[in-house]
Picture 1 (tube, helix red, strand yellow):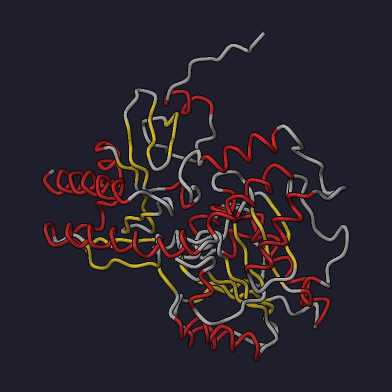
Picture 2: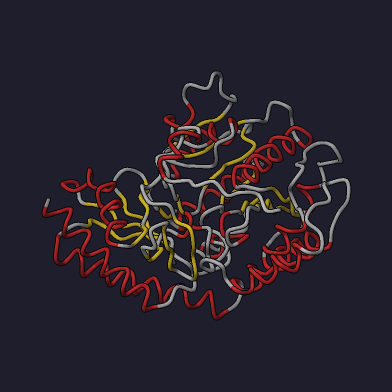
Length: 406
């Protein structure tokens, strides 16, 4: 006998969920491609991508088929055993990147936690237990565990939880001189997003990234790249570091890796991985066969010339539509980012209207995001149909018009 489904509404959220989110007033119940429907049957075009997660849209047929097949085969083994999907996914990630070794987790925070622990452990084992300083950047975001939120450069997320992990220094993003002023032989790692996502869709400059690589080499420090949001094709390359002509020591990826299924990975080299041993780090669910099978299918689709080359064409369509809106309303000071990680920066006189625009867009039937306090963020499916971009941006333009007329 099937269990009875209880009726739930948006009001249910306020009664039963820990109040750490403020979700929209509508409840999505179905998605297909880049379209979503709510409880009342209203349709939305999705430019938010589950915060850069649903890189192949909602319910992609290949991901659904893999979910069904693996779901009827093997879900979980724990790290007491290995499994075929994890080994295949790791092998394909290694073949596509600089890396030799992979660690699987379930979220971006978990992948970053593993990366930061590895950086300190490597420095301790190879150099000195006092080589523990981590250099990170203002407005960065690396996750919500106590360690990752401390490395993230936004006190509003880390204050109030008691003593923070020590020996973490924050400097301005894209400011190489500021890094030079604090780096020393006690530094174990520089941690950076190639494109700051939550911090306002801010790309690193080539000179900055290449300078960080040189400083790490000079001081025997590791360059750790957080590609949780910028990775998996989002920038038009499989990973954003490929735009900069550098090789990192560690990268992390999550969000789009599973196309909507929770999975993450930390990638590194043989030499760095060699300091680890059984029991030093781990996770119960990380590398489970169900997640890895789905991620393998997502990787197989994303890491193709067809999908990656299509990212820039879709970006151009978004940029032209945003420029047309700006021409009409004098709204944006800058359109920035790379690929389909797009930030439209509101001019100072409109900077307080980001949330109003987001809510008005939802009312018009298009889902967008904000970043920082004054940026409208677009992170749609990498394979979104051009007709969906056209229709969605028309809806977005109507939302902007209503907000500015209010």
